[in-house]
Length: 468
Ligand code: PA5
Image 1 (cartoon, rainbow, N blue to C red):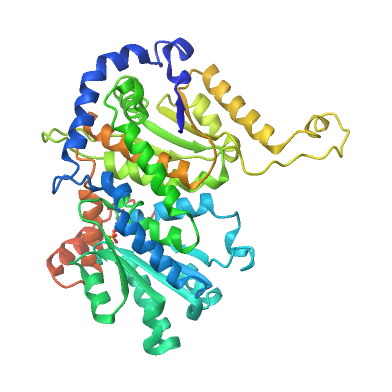
Image 2 (image 1 turned 90 degrees about the vertical axis):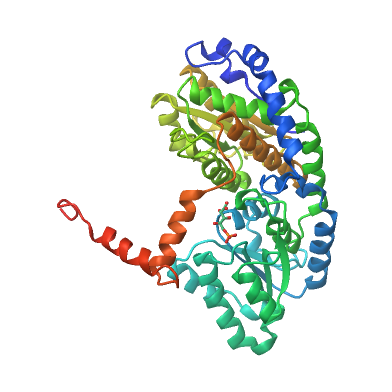
């Protein structure tokens, strides 16, 4: 199992002013946590509770269909192109980046064991898309368009461009190069898929986008490039079982949710830095950022009180950000709780050759990059401790499908529990929807004409200092 070391949030290490007495806090909060975990599990099948993500590890039928389709298209495509944004892209991208061989898209087909390259297009930068279309042979590309609503402008604009080109190159046969992941019944993409005759997979109901990684949204891209999704499922199940434990002393998601909540509400440390000491895990931080920000950043609590909830996730990567952000974390505002992720055993061991005798670098000769990575992570932790900066470390025994699934499921549960502690709805995103709606209006979508006039007026209001 993955583990979390909380030593450096403890008052015995970083002092009473900034640290927590975890034993006392766990005792004090045990009944509340027990109640939250019982309620989440009790409500997980309730329609409209948005807790269906808790059941995704048990959907054997979906896993079977995903594997069957992946086997069917095996060897037929050189590339997979994922079109999706936010929750429809970040999870699969994090898994692929972590689990595929580094520089996957630069490897030969043999080196990729005949699996395709994979590209995630989660932006609409015209220059990037033009560049991608110049390097991709669309005839040999499987396009996985992912949108629950089918209304997301970015994904649909991308898809309209790609579909047009695919059809121009392949004629009616282009359909074989498209697989859509979307709502079961409703939504524009479902209608398009039905009309055009695409193979489809379902984004389940009652799961917010950022909790869909273990539905076909994430599992299909993973399976298409050969990631062992059975291991993913095993990881979810084992973690789910562990997190059903209502005793906070035995439930790491509850512990971590409470630690973050108390650090915010009692110690003013509301920023959560996610800093994996592994480049392969760098996109885990991107995925976590959406999960934490979109779930917890709410204006009002469930009782309608204005709270402007502030937990703010920040991405950093060890060791890279030791030379960028760490100065601020050590000495800047006392507002951050740093979450390190450390990998106990890297797949590779690289020795640094003894080639220079110069004092200042000769000590490196004969050591491994693994030792250096660990020493740097230790050095960073101790420095933060010296400056009395709270930090905790999530230990991943190895980077593999099983532990990745444990980690992601644990962070999902942590977010859900934190939502309950803040007494907010962690599963909606009203103002993110509002900007989506403004975009429809500005782009001239039918039904949004009135908002369009209002918006244009708002956009015309400039202060006298707009262009100094
Ligand atoms: O978490 C969310 O709900 C969002 O990030 C969505 O996943 C994102 O906006 C994409 O939505 P859709 O799948 O409808 O295209």
